[in-house]
Amino acid sequence: MTASSRLIDVELDDTIGRSTPDVEHERAVAIFDLIEENSFRPVSDEGAGPYKLKISLVESRLIFAISRESGDDVVTHILSLTPLRKVIKDYFLICESYYDAIRASSPSKIEAIDMGRRGLHNEGSQALMDRLGGKIEVDFDTARRLFTLVCVLHWRG
Image (cartoon, rainbow, N blue to C red; front, top):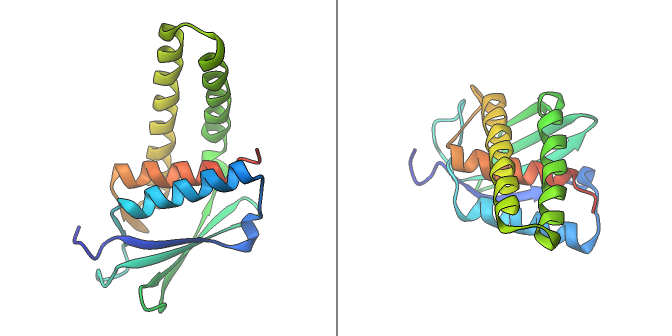
């Protein structure tokens, strides 16, 4: 992909709702990481990016409203979160185990849980990448950052 095939801004719509200061901080970090390094291009577009992304949550659907740097609309994609629900739930559970282990477990147990956590994160990233297939081209690292953001959107603190 070209240098113009990237996101330069990510905005969370009011449908996301606000949460605790810790969760808001995690959301800001996830957005920063995504913008900092990504490869992103709507399949239907001829590569006239860079792009802005506005994310909304309506019922069990993730809405990606994509526009150009100028603000001109490009496309809106609506994705069901149902196929991601189990991996997100499992990811939250293993993250809880990981944070508990950091406080009280041996380094080998922490490492084992972290390997599982990274494996689930990869699984969720691939599932999201598959859901975006034919709609938005992203590389795996961008899919990982998007999956992190999707998870943080569901985290209530």
